[in-house]
Amino acid sequence: MGRGVTVVPITPRDRIILLAQRSSAAPPDDFDDLMSWVAERAAEIDTLPDESRDRVLALLDGVDLLHRQGLSRFVDRVRLLGGRGMLERLTEDSVVSALLDLYDLAPGDDEVRQAAARRSPLVQIGDPPPATE
Image 1: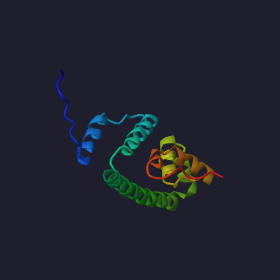
Image 2: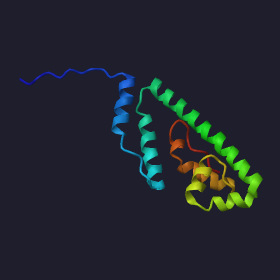
Image 3: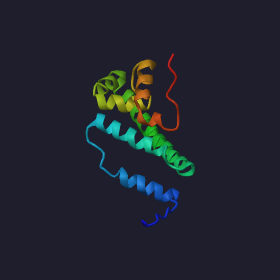
Image 4: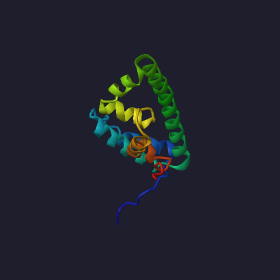
């Protein structure tokens, strides 16, 4: 008869370490590939135990707020110093435009912002996508 298998319960901390090791591949340089990579890592958060998931989501909320405040001030300064036309010229770059869209800071109508939010990997964790009319 074969050997018995001992099942050892895994702690939330160990689960996070295992997920991190599995996801340890460096993020890709290409922006579209990076967005997919982030979405894949974000989906893994849902597999964490509740307490760990809540802590990770709280951390992501803090990082989001940190970036949002900095980018918001940056955009305000660009508008002040270069006018709205300057910001529109900067957002001709697709990466700059996508980043500002993620934080509702790009010039444009609400429909463009909602479409960008639906593409955001961060929308996929924690909150449902914005409602469309």
